[in-house]
Image 1: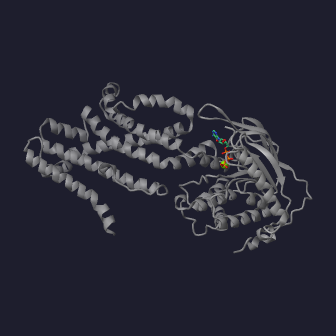
Image 2 (image 1 turned 60 degrees about the vertical axis):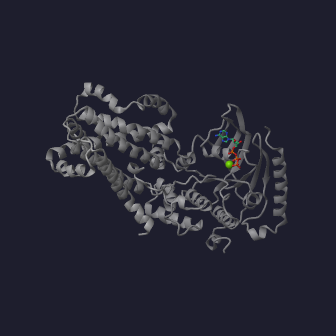
Image 3 (image 1 turned 45 degrees about the vertical axis):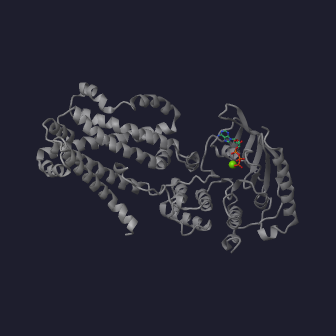
Length: 260
Length: 281
Ligand SMILES: Nc1ncnc2c1ncn2[C@@H]1O[C@H](COP(=O)(O)OP(=O)(O)OP(=O)(O)O)[C@@H](O)[C@H]1O
Ligand SMILES: [Mg+2]
């Protein structure tokens, strides 16, 4: 492995170590009860991960997130592609989406809770909403940008409009769609935690905010590390998949979003 | 370098006009008006009428912006004319179809497919079995001089190589009419000559109808039965010139032929005149 490649490999690890070191120094300097040192927080991690209750909570979070993200992607990609290729579909959905886009999805939670209760459905729905918009938007932009002559070539080969959407627009827009999915993944994690902050009951967010209420700051920060690590892992996995799917498109420098 | 693939000679038959040629494409008083972003009407094509006989090689020659591509798109069924009609085999053209194969100026390759994947796409779509489609496609890729590049993605190819893939991709599904928009525009002189020869030998073998847009007078005279000269602003047909040169044509013979030279000189003069006319702004 060349030195540059080696550096690329270890760079994220160095960044993590650096961040923890700054934290450690800052916390020692501030000597504040509500700001434990990095080592204290790290020491609390095994307690959380060793506790069956906590694990069930975290897994419940992840399950809601996977469901919300998965359904959002499955609905948003076709919708975005249709909007990108049909002016009337775009004219219908664009104003709707423009209204929803700037609203923080967590702000809708109290209303949704009134209708659907504080359970899984509400939280999954909020994650779904958070993920949908960037995925729709990027699919829309990707589909709009597909070179017309490419569609014409397909039409000349005898592809029907539906086949062109699936077999030309979808692959051609895939790099852009996956950019949207990546943003969606991060938003899924964020909405997952916020939804659990608003509707406490179970989940990683629940552990975090309960600990905060009880003044167990090492647990609070341990949970922040755990959530951050989940983000990094999910992003790294996603990046693997993405790179494999769009190898044919432009060469690029890959830097996990979590570090950018 | 073999000028014409040795194999092809067995298919080359002298062109005789024993059978009465029938019209395959009829363009009847076609006009195309575009709305510009300044909300003004821009007449790209004005009252074009043209009949193309089955098996003919027809070139369209004219200054940039005179509507050559637009005319090709209308025949392809990608654009419907503002007025007038276009027919193929007596049926009105309402949309694209595999009977007309376009080779676009912009290549429009599928970037997520390899060279082989691009070339196989048409035959596969037409239901040719994978193994058969692959064998045919590999032969075509070799013909356009890209053997060894089968597994390259379009982004890994040069402009000229992309153009050759685009040509192979269209030839692969055997359209009856080839609609070629400056297909050799991005090629170096050497490759250009070679592909002209290859195209001629394919054409002499299969007698597909070819509608061929070009900027090059040499190329138009060398390849065509008929050269359609267009002029600009608005785009209209200025002159249709029959190229009465014997076939099969050999480049080295033709370049020395005074009749060929006269065609080139005459058409070049016309071209200059229509260029001087300039845009009526
Ligand atoms: N979609 C469009 N909207 C508006 N104007 C257009 C459009 N397409 C083409 N035109 C105009 O129509 C005219 C003819 O364009 P076209 O592309 O057919 O020219 P061309 O002869 O192929 O030129 P070139 O040799 O440079 O390729 C041009 O003046 C161009 O500005
Ligand atoms: Mg053109």
